[in-house]
Image 1: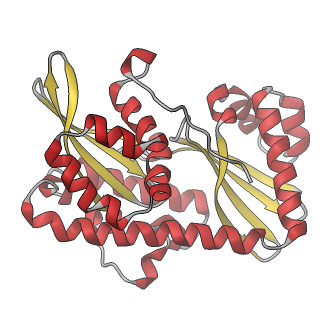
Image 2 (image 1 turned 30 degrees about the vertical axis):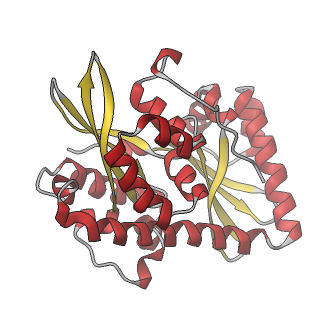
Length: 297
């Protein structure tokens, strides 16, 4: 299995935005970052909610693959949504401009079902894109468009995230998100319980990572013989941070075949859907971008 190793600290001075620095720090050492950077009221709320209802690994996982979306911004305040489509949840944060630099002042979690006005039941333990019928990439496209439209809607649940009435919504959101993280773990465990399958998949992922890092079009073409040449070009053009930090995120089993959804905590908006037999033979490979899939028109 590929392990996540994130930098211990990131800051705006390292050349990334303050919001990306927040994401990286929350993905690597949330307790330390919360202790040093969250104001006392938010720290108290975090300790009484997220810390009690989410494991530390779940918090790290959420921020590792969260996409940053600007919800609202003016000269004094910004509301920034950290959206993880893999577990269909959002952490909406409020930032205040202090001495020419934004500082976080508040934050609340909300799950995608509440945001989109859907019922939550035991059938919702998988993300919406996994419950829809049809091709996986089409489902992901439909899901992200619906969710991004809800994020952009100023009358959605996000508009009331910081009101007292939202407390129960956040508890529901923690439960829904935890269920999806657990479903992801159980699915991977089931798929990889077969030793031959696990070894074949792990070898192929190592080969793919090496070819991506080396931008080796020939190796990628041989590995993915049925892939569209444009896809090979796109794979070879992915920045090194993607190949350096890619992991197998979700596994979908279909008979003797798998779809492995590969994502990167270094570039969370990009992902790869790898269609692969349990023997390790790749039948198709698709590159996705949560950002372009979710463009609101």
